[in-house]
Length: 281
Image (cartoon, rainbow, N blue to C red):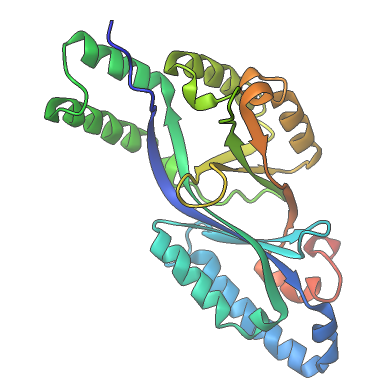
């Protein structure tokens, strides 16, 4: 029997950029209250424009979070239709006077991705059974049709709004590819089985956590970015802890830094700058 291609099919959607900043509190306190007020008003207007992207009245395309811990003070995430639009959001933010008080500590570029392991297995199996050779025009046309159908069916998942949840946990991750433990040398059928079991854990938390997985191979230093949105931050710990017992994570996953933030509505920026979160009204 012919071997299946090792690479699973994927479909891609929104381009995603995470920006983590430190804030220069000392410089901020050194300017006069009228100056602070003017800068806040200008900043809120600019951030509101960035938040909606090119749409008016639609779902948020960018969001701001107050970061916990030493890794930064503020995090902005941007969902856009293209990487070019992400760069435009970056540039627009940099023109704001408020940006003078920010230092970019970390950023992450990725694209919303849905892996199609099950569809890959079915599609590859059917093509091989029909005698279609990989990389031929017939093969490429069949694959293209599958991707188009899946993309149309998954549009809402590929181009999601930023969930309005109060808390966000973001982290990048890799699949191990060392000398003795290498995800990319495992047959696709085995990887499909492990990913199926892995996804079942995520789905069991679906009523408490919204997950957005984005691919970053060739775009950033890690292979995937994971965003978890929830009303209870403790659920991040429970979900990630349970997943680490899963075979695909226990044996083949490596995790990057974790960032946890509290949602900060743009219009509440002035309040944050006085040392209060939005929900302290």
